[in-house]
Length: 396
Ligand SMILES: C[S@@+](CC[C@H](N)C(=O)[O-])C[C@H]1O[C@@H](n2cnc3c(N)ncnc32)[C@H](O)[C@@H]1O
Image 1 (cartoon, rainbow, N blue to C red):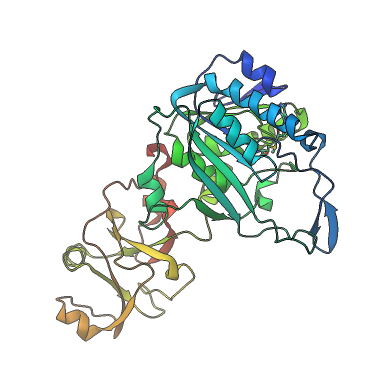
Image 2: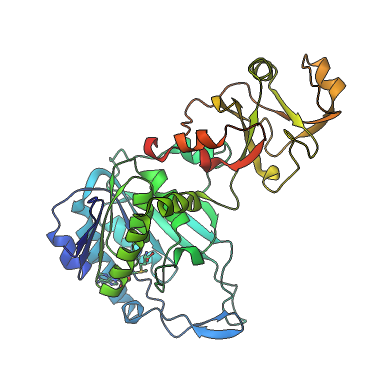
């Protein structure tokens, strides 16, 4: 063992994965692998005004297609016995390696569940005028055998996508500067990608193995979400970077800040948090209508960014009795006069115009509002928050 954190949730092995995998005698719930893509062939990309090499390191140089197949076959076969019967494996790639990975997975008896396309919302421009810009990567998700009953958190994935089952194309940004504070890895994955993968396929307290851990993005995301991590990499420098990242989140305020950041997605559905008096809240639920003052004063809401992505409204009475409702139409609101609201039995007395949202009267029962979120919603001022703010990581 190269390293184990004091909380024992973050364990690292240094060495050739093939060797280390054969020595592990633990069973894992999920394996996430970001192996060499074998794309370091002297290509170029544009960064700022400069043309720079895309080469990642000797470990990523393509030797031959037979070599790539052999490499993938060996590590995938070595991983299989370490995965629990109902476990799943995620493997990343581009066209350089993904077809080889897919074949090796099938040959080893895995069954493909999905192929996720990660569409980079901020791709680096690729150099050359003979092809489209490279802006996506693929992640194969497979279960151990066709008979395995794998875990998929469909409820959460649907909620994160505004009530519609999440598609297999994920638009997410590339790794941000805030993820590189402890140093850089040439092929570091964004924490937000791992956030979704981990929440989709694991339960709280489960353990994830990453046989090509690099800077340990998988481990950081896993620990931020209450999951355990075991990682392997042959490169000590990368593992040391991973240890620094783990040390960073051992600081409580840093942990909370990172936990919030990894959940943020510029594309995400939002929730309007609205305070209502007890009687008004009951009436709102009865009619499926929620309103708030249109204007600038206390208790009102300007139409701010995030409004167009509104999918839910959370009604509360001073931070208590929080109930989440789905809007009838995403992003849709109307401006009503005081008179119109009165016709629906309300008694608004603060303004002439109100923003009105119509919602489905059935509350979303599966929502667990984290305690730290509850404390922040005890306010009369309406707010727009990302839906992920309301997910209690300990209970998902
Ligand atoms: C694509 S990178 C993984 C990056 C990682 N997901 C992250 O976010 O930092 C692949 C990693 O595999 C490691 N690697 C390549 N061949 C290996 C082998 N045979 N055994 C162990 N590690 C290996 C490299 O050192 C590199 O860090």
